[in-house]
Amino acid sequence: MATVPLLLLWDIDGTLLLRASTEHGRALRSAAARVHGLESLDGVTAEYAGRTDAAILRDLLRLSAVEDSAIDALASEVRDACAEAFAQLCPDDLSSFVAPGVPEVLGALAVRPSEFRQALLTGNFEPIARLKIQRAGLAGYFEAGEGAFGSDSVSRAELPAIARRRAGSWPRSRTVVIGDTPRDIACARADEVRVVAVATGPFEVAALADADAVVDDARAVLPVLEDWATA
Ligand SMILES: [Mg+2]
Image: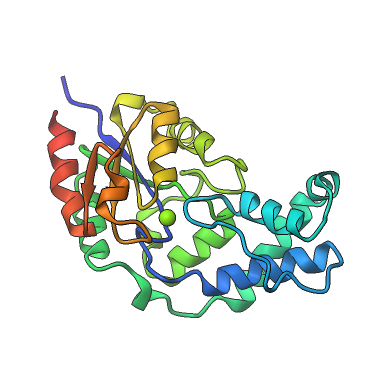
């Protein structure tokens, strides 16, 4: 009997793209400030790594004395405004931010559909994620209607199950999260799927030791996945 392909759920920031979040951060801040009638969210800081856009925005707005009820009431308006702001700010070409080896690895996996299927799993709101990937020249690897995004849940822990459902109730045992932060590992654990951590973001290999495999470069992901695909 043929083995079920591995569903690979790729994180974007710190994994597929490196240091490409400046305009994204500016878009979130300016859009949320405008929708909530605040002068600015500049200078307000939150933890970003591995978190969803909605979770980051909630922190920024709470620190600016916005009530949770108002945050909830305007959440979808803020989401739309963030996507519009990012579309204005996003550089035309993000290809220089693609992590070393990523195009080669995605390409090598894409030509083996009987072994691998690829989708995105990111805390970015979906329109922001899709635009980044398009401007990075990687959109051809990720089909519309697949994956899971910060617009699907405020909690990253819920995203793997959403991505598996969109792939057609993909089995946990054949799903792998690939990301760069302890929160990527935690979301995989929450859904009981495997995880490869890549130490190309803000965390060193030692801080990612709870993953099923830890590598220091995107190129090193390929042999791990090839091993798991046949197991
Ligand atoms: Mg990341």
